[in-house]
Structure formats: structure tokens, C-alpha cells
Length: 351
Image 1 (spheres, rainbow, N blue to C red):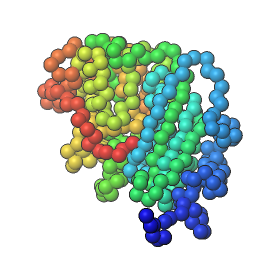
Image 2 (image 1 turned 135 degrees about the vertical axis):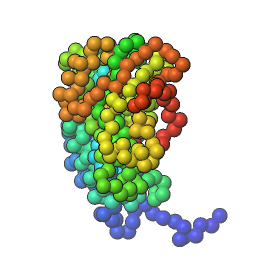
Image 3 (image 1 turned 90 degrees about the horizontal axis):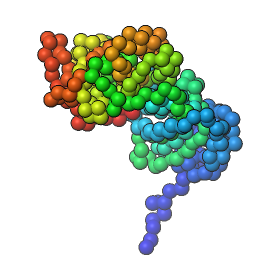
Image 4 (image 1 turned 120 degrees about the vertical axis):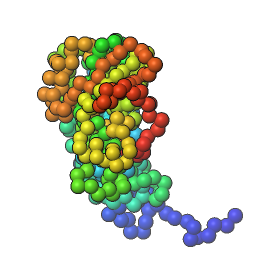
């Protein structure tokens, strides 16, 4: 078999470019070392990364550990209120926090498409570092791969988070009881709508901003104030509707919410009406849903509203004995309507 010379490519260009990522940056050689030593380590520097070992050596924890992993393929990489770097950190630490863990460490795996500008990578790494600092976690290990043009969409990130479980741990949706109160900690639908508007280049007088943020302080405040949380979840893909349906299925109870109580910003409401998408089905990245026993909502709201990230917490409904519908919404005119479970993502590539 003959191979035409023009069909062969070399991952190391004759004159390596300094302005964008090349295949050679992922081959483990000199350019890989330069990328790590000149770009990645300075942005994320800490004692765990300094040795560049194959695994991070971490200190012993007092309690059980929790681990969560997630991948981020958001498009575009930068959007109003955040970017893929901060989103990766926030998404991971929030998954740990709502599970009852105090996040401690995360890994950072990057799959970079050939041609990504070095300045773009630098901005993402700076965002990862700032989000980790704000969240109180450290990036302790990672991996970088480069794929040919067209094999990815600029940059994909995978993270794994490790945290220490802290008592009391919320028992989860199986512990829900009739008359429990349902609370949402912020305006819904902001993240998905912000990403979509940015991706499509929509031009409105005022556009949504993502709610991407760490929720660690809010969870800590609930714990400090001894709020008896039955269940807690961050409402990401599928939005508030997905969480409510998951809880209803697990508990075999009906969850009822009031449409008029749902916190929705004017920007999200306007865009929802134009696009025909209900914000209750749209992803969030800095919004919790929690259920507390009847009589505890006042203390829970005071605790949450004292934290910047959850200052707009609202009571939106309650848990009821099981009826024909798993989740119902009381509409503005007093009608009670079943809320359909999301069949798929109305806005893809939002995380």
C-alpha cells in the first residue's frame, strides 16, 4: 500500500506556534511541559500540584468521603455570568455540598481542540482558579489532551470532586412527608437562558445572566442554624421540574407548587414568552431546591436569605399525599394543572 506524502501530518510543526494549542501540546514532550509549566501550574499552583505526580497524595479526613464527577461541554465557552471554567468548579462543588459534604479537592481534565487560542485557555484557567478559591477547594491533579480540529468543540472539561461528609446529612427524598415545605433559593432558568441567548446571538434590551455560583456557604448556613433539611438538590439539567419529578417518584407523594411564588427575573420571563419555553424546565447552576418539615420554612428562609448567593430564596409549595399527578402547579387563576416531566433538554449544551 502506498501513502502519498501530502497525506502525512506531523503533530510538531516546524516552527511551533505560541498563540494557539497544537497537537504537539498533548504529546507529552517539550511543548506539553511548557504548556503545563507556563500556563497551567501558575494559574492553579498549590502544594498538591507542585510535584506533578501521577496521583495526588491527600491528607486523611476524619469522616467518610463523598466523590462526584461531571463533564462540561457548554457552548459557547463564555456566556453572561460565567464560562466553562467557573461552571466546571461550581457544578462539582455544588453536587458535593447538596450531598452533605464539605468540598475539599477537585481534579481537572481538559480535552482541547487543536487551534484553541492560548489566550482563551489562559482565561479559562484563571476562571477555574478564581472559582476554586471562592469555593474553598484546590485543584490537586489533572490531565490535558489535544485532539485534531473538528474532533471536539474548542474545549471540554471533566472534573471529579472529593469532599468530607458532615453531619447531619440530609436523608433525601425518600424521607419526604406530607406538609413538608418546598423552597427554591433563587430565580429559576437564568443559566440555560443566558447560555442560549449568547449562543444564538439574540439581541434584547436586557438579557439573562447565568446564576452559576458555589452554594457551599448556603449549605453551611443551614447546617449551622440546625435547619432540619429533608432533601436538597441543585436544579441543573431539567431545571426545577426535573428535581420535583425525581422527588415525587422516590417518595411516592405529590409535590404542589404555586406559579405566582416562583422567582423568575423579567429577562428570563420575557425570553421564555418569546421562545415558548417554561423557565421551570430550564437549567440552573447556582440554585438549590430543598424540602423542610412544616414549621421550619421561616428559619430556613432567614438562613438562606442571609447568604449572598441565596438571598432571593422563596417558599414555592409543599408536599401532599399522592394524587393522580406526581407534580402539580397552581396557576394564577386558581387552576391546578399537572406539570409534565422533561422529556429532553429544550436547550442543549448548557453545561
